[in-house]
Image 1 (cartoon, helix red, strand yellow):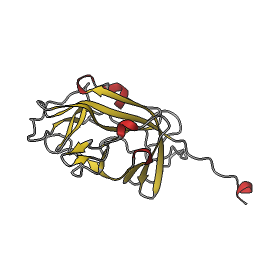
Image 2 (spheres, helix red, strand yellow):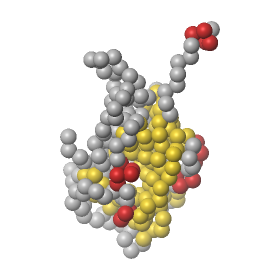
Image 3 (cartoon, rainbow, N blue to C red):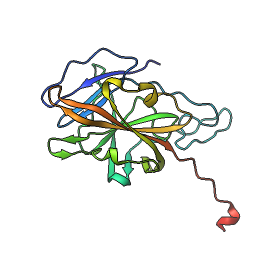
Image 4 (tube, rainbow, N blue to C red):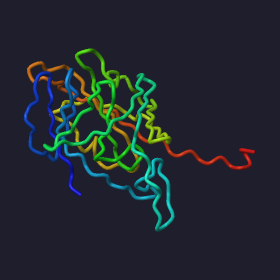
Length: 227
């Protein structure tokens, strides 16, 4: 399985030419008014050792020789702390190998070429910071703190995550391995842009990344306690 490579810089008035594929750099910038800037080689999903099985939204174990039914793709993300309640659009690549950003500035998108939220590995959800009209879906992403709750729906099933930290980093020193490296279980990355807007370049200088880890599945209630 090859790794997808991206290079996007959609600015306020024009789109710069796509860059060559890269292997060790990542930078997301959702520029005010127009779109996404992403130059990254996202690692393919790596299943960790143990009971985690691809396709299980909450870390289920399966009997030998059997596989669970594939869960629905992510359909909604909710972050009560910052007032986010957005349907999710699947983000893919165009013929040039560039990421197609969310068309709606008030809607977040999930990168469908990587892990889905709740599956092993770091799932990626991206959203615009702002537009010419004002704040966009991830305008308040930088307000999140450790312990804040993130909910993602996959059909009628909800997967919950807890924020473990945030990172603001310059795009030219983006820590690819830290953000996209393999994880021992399901994790989530919420990404937008941040810092100062570079009017000459036409995009923000920084990225804001929120790290979150899936809550463990709830233990079943003993029958005697439920009666």
